[in-house]
Length: 301
View (cartoon, rainbow, N blue to C red):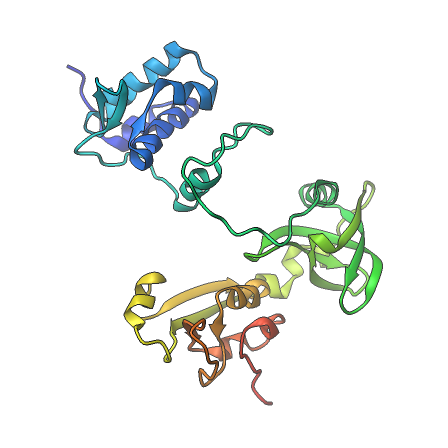
């Protein structure tokens, strides 16, 4: 009889490829209730013999997690199931709603019926690719950009991070035209060209971006106008009635707008959509995009 090693030791003894396949078996069992050899074959393009060995190995190491249903001819979740792997909630939900996306072109499709809101801003690959190369290679990109304030212009930017604010994608970069760090929305970029012989200067690097490096600590509480604050506390996973967030100053305004947080000092915003109130609005002092936060007014000096 094989000696069953503790889960962490047993997992560490596996190769990376084996870990990925056994974790997939567990994913199917945990979130869908069943797993078949064909699922493994399609996901990883392995031979049937390899899939058979993987199921045998999972069953050998984690016997309480898996049973074989002779009637359905598939493996099912065990009665005493306890997950052996760490399943990241965001990745699980992405896989369930959008599939695993095997390789660059492959897409297995959603594993469950899910309805997702459409992103307002999907970058074109012709714009995205030069910018991501510039981030990776620490180079400059020339872009044609249209903004509300200055209209159409050509700029040289030093990008260093992609940001998704929940509605759209933008890139954080140093703008050589304004000599400031700014956010550039992808759909407003008409053309992007990597400058191959360029070099990002020290003052253009992320370490010099004050708003990016500043961390603001925000205390969100149920809005006083809400009738059932306990429900909101559960919805947002609050501790003692408070959700404590640590955000980069450069994205704080986007998050507060997306979450529809009342940021007025006296929780004066009306409407049932305001489920949260920022209890410490002074924390936004000096945050450049605080203007996006609903109801926020900078203190008078």
